[in-house]
Image (cartoon, rainbow, N blue to C red; front, side, top):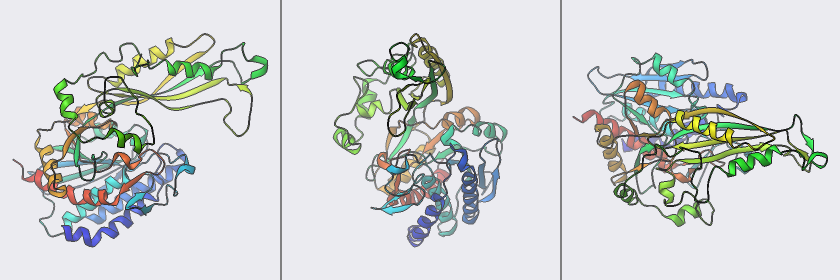
Length: 454
């Protein structure tokens, strides 16, 4: 297996670079043709690797790429999930190289989607090819692949597809690589993910933009009002002020928090890595806890009025913001969406009206660490890294993990290889060559461990 990887790693990287050149941005309709092109690319590469029954399955939005390789009805079955769509690359001017012209610098692949999630999806394609061709026993269990093109916009059609294809997707466990490890010398497996409640809000004042000299001081300014409303959503201790927001939050015990604190984490390195003199967050919790076991609220975008070059003295008719909340067990997206909407509308000052438009959400999830599948993944990482992986809780959201549990009855193993420093969703996203190749090396060990487990 090691020889096959060493002999083919240049080709593997070249193929990934070709895929990264396709700007499969699902959020922007102008890239729709490229999203379809990325799906076609993936279909071809799966077929070349030896996957059978590969098809592009249409949905009401972007298609799902499905394929399988079934060795025996009696064998265990793994359903591999990932996504081929990527985040918008804006602002382009902050990239040190064009986002869809991938380059390797300092042993890292720089491109939009390099880590999230094209690079990690492609690990699975090449790991399967390696099992088929390295002469080490072939594929030991049934493998099904399902890759979607709408993860970055809320997976709007995935649940519909899953509900309509439960027999096709029947499996024993879900395997996902859309997460990360603590460090290249500290392997880890995420066992918890936060949920999500995402909204766009609009504050409306006068019926048109007004001259700020003729009307300023006599009318409520929607931008000022929006800023005041947003500022009020946290108190001085970083606590979210929405009534009932913390009602169902799963509070970890002191012993559980002490176990979490054993994971290697440097506060100073954390601050230095993002160029800040100090960290910030809810009082009484560490940075590691704030980004994993505590719920949060953040403004993801805010705009209104004149934002072009030079000056234009207006009071805007409207102001807008995008606001997301990360949720923890046992919060639900429906509960938090209702509480946020009610509260945000209630704090509108006189002179403006408020509209809250929920966008999408997802549920928090904690996966078991005592399952056969988790042990197979941990053993695989120990084989290739030489160290037992640390179980961690991640700060991000993969809403479909909870959906897979509710619709298919399956737990998920989050076997990711990215790093927090990979700048996903940001300019200069990258994925280490080491991490890409280590994923290809590790995944076959998972299949073999899982297939052999009793």
